[in-house]
Length: 293
Image (cartoon, rainbow, N blue to C red; front, side):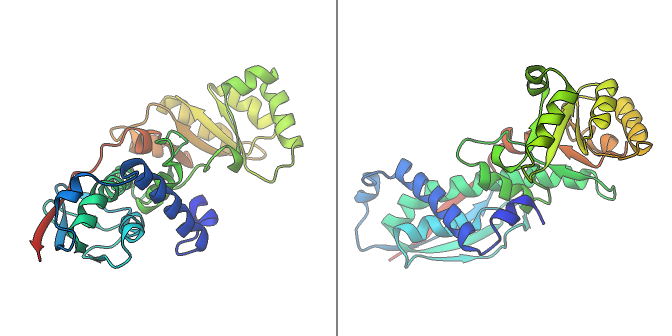
């Protein structure tokens, strides 16, 4: 089970409330006191529209789309021809939407924004997951996410087949170089972290093999190897395996689709990639009205 699903199980009240809050904020941002342009359309007119994928993608964000429309008009019908997590092809119809024309036009942008962005994160994640297929290694996200869409993107990572490193600062202790510098040493900061008895995971980032050895001596059981070369990663894995208490090793930094499989083959347990959330390009989707009454 991913961390997201521990906090927000599918179909749980917590999940529904998360989606609702994000949708309400998005609608408030976009619609405000009203849609001036939609008022050009006859108030009683009904319409049917379709949403089309303009490129191959992993679809993610259906609950957000549903909520966007239901928040404006609960009678709008969205009939999906695909499911969450499904791979779709260029020019494939994703759904049809029937309801007042004004509502369809008002909600279009918010609904597509969620679907395009979350599908982009899921699609990018799946590329990395597929690249290391057959290797015992996990693809993880980071906190490098779009502001106010952190949890939605964490969800999208899981739809793409990835895992969550931690949801936020409250969800785990990740000791980085600045924490080590401020505390004085790896040993000192690990002692303080363990003394908290927080019940949360403790991970420490190291930037060299000597630091790795120091972290293991200090009792670290989860270590992030920052910007290690593949040769250094292999050496780190071998040293870790010979330790009295081997740690979970996670590679991070400078990782892309061209080298992720090579990195996974070094034997690291996890690979965290900020690009799957912070560098995504929205999937090209289009809504087209096909019929009006």
